[in-house]
Amino acid sequence: MGEEAPILDIESSEENATRRNEDSMVDLYPLSSYYFGSRDAVRVKDEMIADRVVRLKSDYAAHGLRTCVEAVLLVELFKHPHVLLLQYRNSIFKLPGGRLRPGESDVDGLKRKLASKLSVNENVLLPGLEVGECIGKWWRPNFETLMYPFLPPNVKHPKECLKLFLGRLALHQQFVVPKNFKLLAVPLCQIHENEKTYGPIISQIPKLLSKFSFNMMEI
Image (cartoon, rainbow, N blue to C red; front, side, top):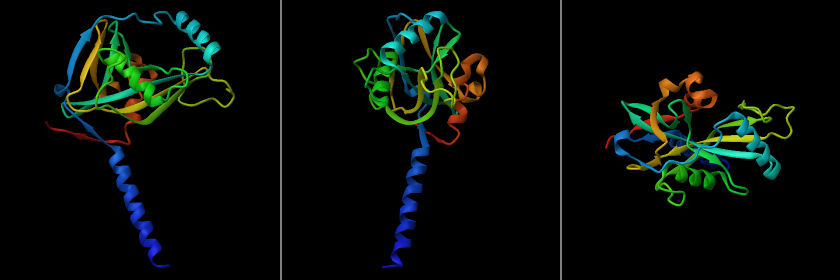
């Protein structure tokens, strides 16, 4: 009996290693396998920084910490990973997602927000979409515009938390976005540390994805 335990431990370790390898492998389907359409334009909030600050203060007074979730969705083009980004006014880039409702889970909230941003309407969830692990988290210590990838030790009551999740897309997904937005596939090499164009969070996505391996699927 005493000699069998190490064998079981080795087998368990091998199973765990296999599971980790599977979790770190991401299948990417060609951009051409997806359909892109449009629907009626929507009103855009936070056109002025002052307006956003007022809304943040109002939300915090009513509900406390504001939690937002966003998805990193990847496709393949020219054998290179591309991130799907929403573009507004030709200069503002965003990941699809948004604020959670009170008591709503991260996964349920993200699926709801992806439906509202990328589907016909909020009630039509994206079929086959799998919300994977959280790959990054940022904090807003106060009502200023800057967010940090850590919570400063002197901050006891942060105002907002933003979580990025890796989304795994199914084949032949359909995306329908408002007419005043564009859904673009942007290569990781273009985003990498390009804070001037994409901001401090999106520009860090290539680093967050460095632990993953990409399987370029051929169809």
